Image 1: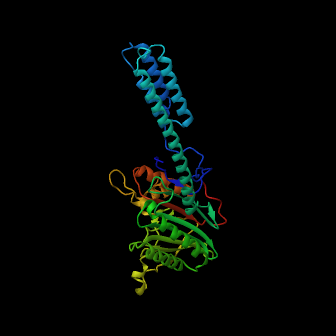
Image 2: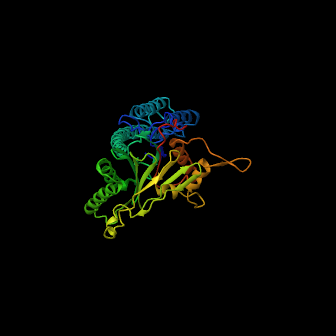
Image 3: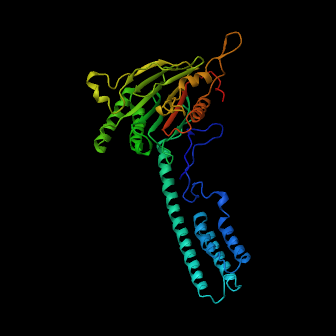
Amino acid sequence: MTRARPPHLLHGRAGARPPRTPTADEPADHGWPPRWAMPLPWLVIVAAVVLELATPVDYSFSSLLSASTPLAALLYRPRWTIAVAVASIAAFLALWPAGQLGAVDDPRIPVDLSSLVLVAGLAVWFCFAKERIEHRLRRVQAVAEAAQYALLRPLPRSLGPVRMAGFYRAADAEALVGGDLYSTRKSRYGVRVIVGDVRGKGIGAVTTVATVLSTFREAALVQEDLTAIADRIEQALVLETSTSGDAELFVTAVLLEFPVDRPHAVRVLNRGHPPVLVLGPDGAAPIDAPFGLPLGLGDLLRGEGGGARGEVLCPLPADRLLIAYSDGITEAANPSGVFYPLASRLTSRFGLTPVEGGRARVPQDVAPERVAAFVEQDVARWAPRSKDDMVTLVLCRPDPADPPRGH
């Protein structure tokens, strides 16, 4: 494919659905051929015939007929390419006895006809070969996209008491998965979430993404705390480093837990990742949680007890939302080179709104879907040429007695 994939919501808004993996029988989405080019092979044949009829015999335009079938091979499927080949040969045979190509017994005319037939035959063969290659490409692409889509599964609208939404974009225009990652798990300890960023970007980081996600999904179900989950991921990365030989392999990540016994709190463990934002009526601000070393580098300070620690319990009122994101968001630069100011943009859009008299008005309840859609669209407007991996998750734990937040 040659057309870049836009960012997509991780789950639907009002009927929207995640990207569907195409089947092998569907035509490849190449943006080709353009509609305006479709009549060209037939127009070339018509032009050749008209010019032969309208000009003296000394002027020959039969070579245009030879161009029609190769052009059709680029634009059409085999059946229509064969039709153009037959039409071009038929036009030549019709012009020959009418004397429009020169004297009927001119020995050069059979040579021209043989050349036309040869070129048409080669073009038809090329079209069949192109069709087989595209069919194989569609099958490989369908399998690859299905595998990638299974790796980064769509978010549910809610998981236990937690509502969530988000969007994801891979830096590689051909991929569904890049170097950013996310996952959610419901365990007996609470709902657990990871948002991370592998060193490097694009399709080359997918192996490490798979390692982190598979380890998290298993560890989040059985480990008692976030630090233990991080340790399990650390061990998996050490094993991957030993096999890959990449001594600089690491992953920045933030792990969240909405504990079952603390409905108005969230546990946070930040391993070298951009800080989680808390969005409330007074705007967006970083959550107060210490930084640890990225996953994969914890052994550097493990002897001093500071490499893998830092799990904290933070208050989270029911009217607050958490925004976890990758640095692809905050490092998206506009044409002037200014990075995207996520916190201030969220504050200006969803924070207190001044009114006459110097007071402030609190906006209506904000759903995670609205915040995720705003960030997705706002980043795209701010940095339309950004090629980084991007992920944003918006999470909240509303009071069970509160009505659903509006869209």
